[in-house]
Length: 164
Ligand code: SF4
Ligand code: SF4
Image (cartoon, rainbow, N blue to C red):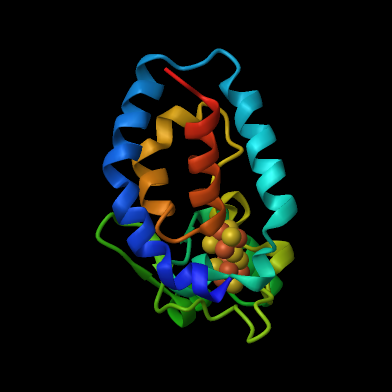
Protein backbone atom coordinates (compact mmCIF):
# COMPACT_ATOMS: atom_id res chain seq x y z
CA UNK A 1 0.00 0.00 0.00
CA UNK A 2 2.79 2.43 0.89
CA UNK A 3 4.36 2.14 -2.55
CA UNK A 4 0.98 2.63 -4.25
CA UNK A 5 0.31 5.74 -2.13
CA UNK A 6 3.68 7.19 -3.12
CA UNK A 7 2.94 6.69 -6.81
CA UNK A 8 -0.70 7.74 -6.67
CA UNK A 9 -0.38 11.50 -7.36
CA UNK A 10 1.66 10.81 -10.51
CA UNK A 11 -0.59 7.95 -11.63
CA UNK A 12 -3.62 10.21 -11.22
CA UNK A 13 -1.93 13.05 -13.07
CA UNK A 14 -1.08 10.73 -15.98
CA UNK A 15 -4.72 9.60 -16.17
CA UNK A 16 -6.26 13.06 -15.75
CA UNK A 17 -6.92 13.75 -19.43
CA UNK A 18 -8.32 10.28 -20.02
CA UNK A 19 -10.53 10.60 -16.93
CA UNK A 20 -11.79 14.00 -17.99
CA UNK A 21 -12.84 12.66 -21.40
CA UNK A 22 -14.46 9.64 -19.76
CA UNK A 23 -16.47 11.70 -17.27
CA UNK A 24 -17.61 14.12 -19.97
CA UNK A 25 -19.01 11.14 -21.91
CA UNK A 26 -20.48 9.68 -18.73
CA UNK A 27 -22.46 12.85 -18.14
CA UNK A 28 -23.77 12.92 -21.70
CA UNK A 29 -24.54 9.22 -22.00
CA UNK A 30 -25.14 8.09 -18.43
CA UNK A 31 -25.94 4.36 -18.33
CA UNK A 32 -29.42 3.77 -16.88
CA UNK A 33 -28.00 1.33 -14.34
CA UNK A 34 -25.06 3.49 -13.23
CA UNK A 35 -26.14 3.43 -9.57
CA UNK A 36 -26.02 -0.39 -9.60
CA UNK A 37 -22.72 -0.48 -11.46
CA UNK A 38 -21.17 1.87 -8.89
CA UNK A 39 -22.56 -0.11 -5.97
CA UNK A 40 -20.91 -3.29 -7.33
CA UNK A 41 -17.60 -1.61 -8.16
CA UNK A 42 -17.50 0.03 -4.73
CA UNK A 43 -18.22 -3.22 -2.89
CA UNK A 44 -15.70 -5.22 -4.94
CA UNK A 45 -12.98 -2.63 -4.37
CA UNK A 46 -13.53 -2.33 -0.62
CA UNK A 47 -13.42 -6.10 -0.24
CA UNK A 48 -9.79 -5.85 -1.38
CA UNK A 49 -8.74 -2.48 0.00
CA UNK A 50 -8.47 -2.16 3.75
CA UNK A 51 -8.69 1.50 4.80
CA UNK A 52 -6.71 0.69 7.95
CA UNK A 53 -3.62 0.03 5.82
CA UNK A 54 -4.07 3.43 4.16
CA UNK A 55 -5.81 6.33 5.97
CA UNK A 56 -4.48 8.63 3.26
CA UNK A 57 -7.70 10.71 3.27
CA UNK A 58 -7.34 11.33 7.02
CA UNK A 59 -3.64 12.10 6.61
CA UNK A 60 -3.81 14.47 3.68
CA UNK A 61 -7.19 16.20 3.40
CA UNK A 62 -9.61 15.85 6.28
CA UNK A 63 -13.36 16.42 6.06
CA UNK A 64 -15.57 19.45 6.32
CA UNK A 65 -17.73 19.53 9.44
CA UNK A 66 -21.44 20.28 9.18
CA UNK A 67 -23.36 21.86 12.05
CA UNK A 68 -24.80 18.43 12.84
CA UNK A 69 -21.31 16.90 12.88
CA UNK A 70 -20.10 19.60 15.26
CA UNK A 71 -23.08 19.11 17.60
CA UNK A 72 -22.68 15.31 17.61
CA UNK A 73 -18.92 15.26 18.10
CA UNK A 74 -18.82 18.01 20.73
CA UNK A 75 -21.51 16.14 22.68
CA UNK A 76 -19.30 13.02 22.50
CA UNK A 77 -16.47 15.07 24.03
CA UNK A 78 -18.88 16.67 26.53
CA UNK A 79 -17.90 20.06 25.20
CA UNK A 80 -19.92 23.01 24.01
CA UNK A 81 -19.96 23.19 20.19
CA UNK A 82 -18.05 26.49 20.31
CA UNK A 83 -15.40 24.93 22.53
CA UNK A 84 -14.96 22.09 20.02
CA UNK A 85 -14.71 24.61 17.17
CA UNK A 86 -12.10 26.65 19.03
CA UNK A 87 -10.04 23.57 19.81
CA UNK A 88 -10.04 21.81 16.45
CA UNK A 89 -11.60 23.74 13.58
CA UNK A 90 -11.10 26.73 11.33
CA UNK A 91 -13.17 28.27 8.54
CA UNK A 92 -11.82 27.72 5.02
CA UNK A 93 -12.06 29.82 1.82
CA UNK A 94 -15.49 28.36 1.08
CA UNK A 95 -16.78 29.25 4.51
CA UNK A 96 -16.86 25.66 5.71
CA UNK A 97 -15.56 24.35 9.00
CA UNK A 98 -12.48 22.19 8.43
CA UNK A 99 -9.67 20.81 10.58
CA UNK A 100 -7.05 23.25 11.79
CA UNK A 101 -4.37 20.87 10.57
CA UNK A 102 -3.80 17.56 8.83
CA UNK A 103 -3.19 14.67 9.48
CA UNK A 104 -6.48 14.68 11.34
CA UNK A 105 -6.12 15.09 15.10
CA UNK A 106 -8.44 12.13 15.63
CA UNK A 107 -6.31 9.68 13.63
CA UNK A 108 -4.26 7.25 15.69
CA UNK A 109 -0.81 5.89 14.82
CA UNK A 110 -2.55 2.57 14.07
CA UNK A 111 -4.78 4.36 11.50
CA UNK A 112 -7.85 3.97 13.70
CA UNK A 113 -10.18 6.94 14.07
CA UNK A 114 -10.72 7.80 17.74
CA UNK A 115 -14.18 9.26 17.01
CA UNK A 116 -15.22 6.60 14.51
CA UNK A 117 -18.82 6.18 15.78
CA UNK A 118 -19.47 9.92 15.61
CA UNK A 119 -17.12 10.88 12.77
CA UNK A 120 -18.22 13.56 10.28
CA UNK A 121 -20.64 12.65 7.51
CA UNK A 122 -17.96 13.48 4.94
CA UNK A 123 -15.66 10.83 6.46
CA UNK A 124 -18.44 8.24 6.38
CA UNK A 125 -19.14 8.95 2.73
CA UNK A 126 -15.61 9.34 1.35
CA UNK A 127 -14.67 8.55 -1.46
CA UNK A 128 -18.37 8.79 -2.49
CA UNK A 129 -18.01 5.97 -5.02
CA UNK A 130 -21.27 4.31 -3.90
CA UNK A 131 -23.39 7.43 -4.05
CA UNK A 132 -26.29 7.81 -6.45
CA UNK A 133 -25.85 9.85 -9.65
CA UNK A 134 -22.10 9.41 -9.49
CA UNK A 135 -21.74 11.29 -12.80
CA UNK A 136 -22.58 14.51 -10.93
CA UNK A 137 -19.41 14.48 -8.84
CA UNK A 138 -16.84 13.95 -11.57
CA UNK A 139 -14.70 17.00 -10.66
CA UNK A 140 -14.49 15.88 -7.06
CA UNK A 141 -13.74 12.30 -8.11
CA UNK A 142 -10.92 13.45 -10.39
CA UNK A 143 -9.34 15.09 -7.33
CA UNK A 144 -10.03 12.10 -5.11
CA UNK A 145 -8.24 9.60 -7.38
CA UNK A 146 -4.99 11.37 -6.48
CA UNK A 147 -5.63 10.80 -2.75
CA UNK A 148 -7.57 7.57 -2.51
CA UNK A 149 -6.23 4.32 -3.97
CA UNK A 150 -9.71 2.78 -3.85
CA UNK A 151 -11.23 5.66 -5.84
CA UNK A 152 -8.37 5.37 -8.34
CA UNK A 153 -9.00 1.64 -8.82
CA UNK A 154 -12.76 2.14 -9.08
CA UNK A 155 -12.41 4.76 -11.81
CA UNK A 156 -9.98 2.52 -13.71
CA UNK A 157 -12.49 -0.34 -13.47
CA UNK A 158 -15.33 1.97 -14.56
CA UNK A 159 -13.41 2.79 -17.73
CA UNK A 160 -12.95 -0.92 -18.45
CA UNK A 161 -16.63 -1.70 -17.79
CA UNK A 162 -18.44 1.26 -19.34
CA UNK A 163 -17.75 1.67 -23.04
CA UNK A 164 -19.21 4.53 -25.06
S1 SF4 B 1 -11.18 5.91 1.77
FE1 SF4 B 1 -9.51 5.79 0.31
S2 SF4 B 1 -7.91 7.21 1.02
FE2 SF4 B 1 -9.35 6.85 2.70
S3 SF4 B 1 -8.42 5.20 3.85
FE3 SF4 B 1 -9.87 4.24 2.44
S4 SF4 B 1 -8.66 3.74 0.63
FE4 SF4 B 1 -7.46 5.20 1.84
S1 SF4 C 1 -12.47 12.18 11.86
FE1 SF4 C 1 -11.71 10.10 11.76
S2 SF4 C 1 -12.31 9.34 9.74
FE2 SF4 C 1 -12.47 11.59 9.71
S3 SF4 C 1 -10.50 12.35 8.94
FE3 SF4 C 1 -10.36 12.29 11.17
S4 SF4 C 1 -9.48 10.28 11.63
FE4 SF4 C 1 -10.24 10.21 9.54
